[in-house]
Length: 87
Image 1 (tube, helix red, strand yellow):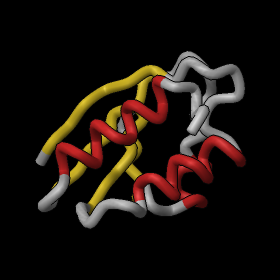
Image 2 (cartoon, rainbow, N blue to C red; image 1 turned 90 degrees about the vertical axis):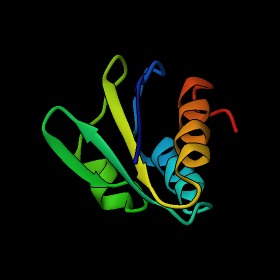
Image 3 (tube, rainbow, N blue to C red; image 1 turned 60 degrees about the vertical axis):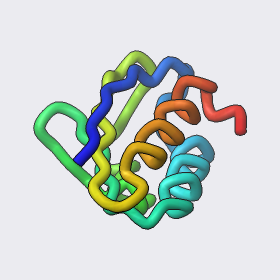
């Protein structure tokens, strides 16, 4: 299991379009991936799950992966979040 925290810096947070980019990226990996905000954890490959967290700009989230490519998955998603979803 590999875990890292990142702060979502873009103004709109993880809504609609950025969330879609996030899910598409998560689905490139074989590992099970979750996003955690406070005490809630959802499947990072689920658009409804990610949107249900209501992640706004300035929110710190935890990305957790478990599987063969867990480190690449977490690092790839962190990079996407830090880029402001400019991928």
